[in-house]
Image 1: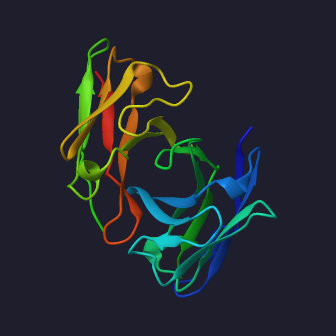
Image 2: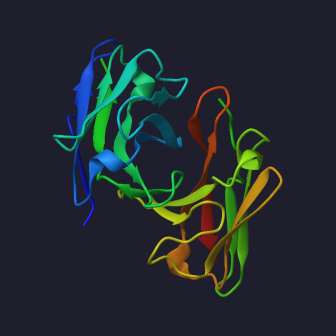
Length: 120
Length: 112
């Protein structure tokens, strides 16, 4: 079955960097656009970034553009999120997300999430 | 980037129907059939309950239904049950100014 396993979260000081990974299994990663979505304390869900199936198109939310970079390695079945210049309001649980089969828009499969805490 | 609005809370008695609204603009909700609804459980990943306005993923109860009129989408829960208590979020895709997705602020459903 579809599995998404995030790793790399932790506590980091403001201004520092952190890299997240998401290992995918149970499906062919190279056929799906993939996303990162975060859940912030008390603020609900926020879409962070997407990357097309072949990695040629990448889009970001206004709040992370120019600081975060989404990438993928389809041969390693892994999605990445490099987060630079971290701010306190980047504190969240970060989820790797795959859309439904046959639908670009519905986020059907979520990982278990990895927690990022930005604090001095 | 765009923003969606939802009521903070909606409540109903067991067996009743409730509807949660999600209002956006012509560049997101009104611009395509891309609205999805998610259920957020404490300490668990969100789950998809409706995609592309009215489709249900496998395993989701038919008591959950979705619709859209203009710039407002709606999630209706029929035959309300105590197990339906949770927070519900809508989401929409938008191409303007660049492709992105936006979530609503969430609605807490309470069964009285």
